[in-house]
Image 1 (cartoon, rainbow, N blue to C red):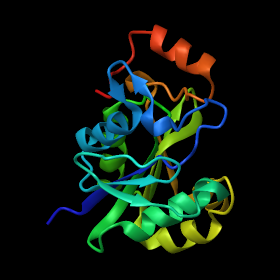
Image 2 (image 1 turned 120 degrees about the vertical axis):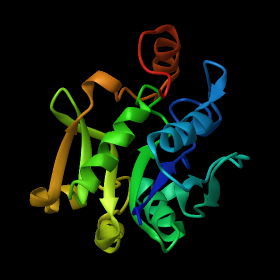
Image 3 (image 1 turned 180 degrees about the horizontal axis):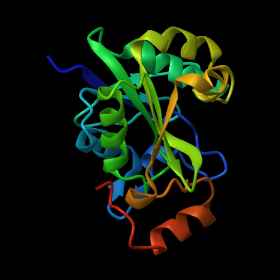
Image 4 (image 1 turned 180 degrees about the vertical axis):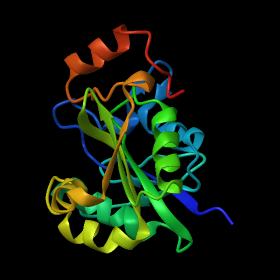
Length: 197
């Protein structure tokens, strides 16, 4: 039986620099939270868990959980999401709500790397590690323990370089994120990149 690859979308922040929670932002006719769910589902993740906080959002095709401690930063959202995953999920692909140019093929490539034996896989762009990130269940405990404040899986990745398989994804997306109104305007204006393929 094929291992279950769950998806985890971190979407709890208030978007303080943007002026509105990023989950609610309309991007080319689709809310960023819906786009993120679609990215993970089309990439091969099931189920998809969305961690919310600042905004109450109805999300289709995903399980929504609330992080009551969302103000403390991304770490608590990652911990909340990991705890919410079903017991039969053998791995998870973690994505962020504010990166609309990530393509679903990146998610698929991480899952393929896991099927080839990787317990940790990270998408790279221009040789730099970004998102999404795949983590096998055997590491969930340590990832959660090290995710403190406004950091996610990065401390774990730095602590275990021997585990990390880098997966080039330059040709299937761009990790540019949306933090400010200027970022949003620039992102809406650009074209030629995957629509969460």
